[in-house]
Amino acid sequence: MVSNVAGTRLLFLLLFIPTVACRKSTTVTVKGQARGSYTFETIFTPKPCSDLVPDDLSHLNSTEFSAAKEIIQTNLGTSSKCIVVFGVLVISNIPDHGNFVNDDWIRLFANTLAVILDKNRDGVVDDPAVGNLMRSRPGTTMAAEDGGTFILGRDATTTDAAEEALLQYIGSTTTIMQDDFGENSDVGQSMRAMTEEIFHTYQHKLGSAYPEVWGISNKGCPMYGHHLLQYGVHFAHGASFGLTTGNHSLRFAQQFRSSKDTCGPSDPNAQKGCDYGQSTLMKCAFRAQCNWYTSQMCCSKTGDSASGADVTGGGCIWPGCAGIEWYYNLVFEYTETMYPSAPWLQGAGEYDMGTSLPGGNSFPQSKADVKAKLTAMGGDCAAVLANIEDPKYHQPSAAFDWYYVPGSPSVATRVADMINNATGGAAATLISGRSTSGLRGIKLHS
Image 1 (cartoon, rainbow, N blue to C red):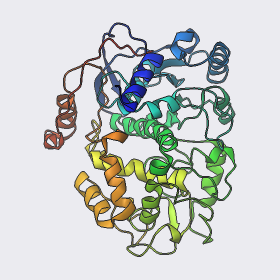
Image 2 (cartoon, rainbow, N blue to C red):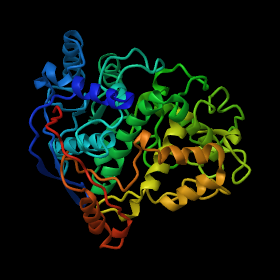
Image 3 (cartoon, helix red, strand yellow):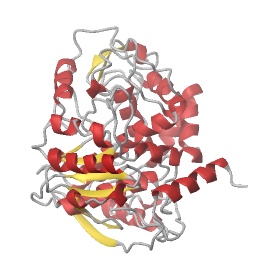
């Protein structure tokens, strides 16, 4: 008899992933605008979004497919490039400029999503429950938390309205902005930026699939109902107060940040109505706020006796921003991920997000630190650690890499090589071996 889990996985395979011949891999190199490069292998090939065919998004009916294809061209331009990964559209309309080559970087976007969804690289989504929710499909409003997702590399000229209109056709995203590939960025900084936004997009559907474990809804929070708040006012990669530009430049997000980027006047009801009891993750996040996570928030007190009850304002509060940013940084510190040409970006980066306000405790900055911190706090925080390490949830467990060729040999050597290049060999001992299983004739759309 086939187990429920195995049966669901098999159903996902049969319905959504065509079983055709293995795809030949391609070696691609992306370059930073200021310095650095990263070479990887991929099975994905971008094509003009105008060349999408119904089989690329076979989960959509003919009307939905035609409407999605048309809105992409209308709102993002006829030069937009597309790849489809496990039914999720990966789109980029960022023009080639300097060292940025759109065809190369969109392949890396696709690889990043594929690695998140298929950690063991066997050509099958690890968790069909999350994979089903992520497939690009129409939604109604952000507040409804319905619809699928897509990955978007957004050029500087695309308007907020043009992006927002995509919701009713292909779902929601956390945007990768052209500014992430600015003239002063090295390759590691740009890779970190795009990895974070793709992981955020995944986090929302992880929370939807397991609301009592990973839920991150803003329902009940002050001003909830404004459609832009549901997917969070995400700050740019360790940005300090006062920075109103970054990875998500939606008009309301900018206005909200501008009004909240100072710690006065103090508002003791800043989080009134937010449901930090909705999930194990948010219960622990609430305990961490003002204690060992103070980034982009204002607190009436900080340190050991502080918690989310002491938040009095800030530019990134509520579950859909503070909670999601906190967990992203936590899990990437746990993996001890490193970025090429940027060894100072190990984990979440060089920022201590617990001491950004005076008196806060240090944010954990290694796997050992994360385990020790969550274990010592006990209760829901110890449960978060158990959930991170529970194979059922397929969370990142080792240093992240961006190499995606299903059926390939162990990727551990690839990760070690990347870290050696970044650190001169000093960090190779961080890597633990991982292996992959065969592709079994499965091909992914592109």
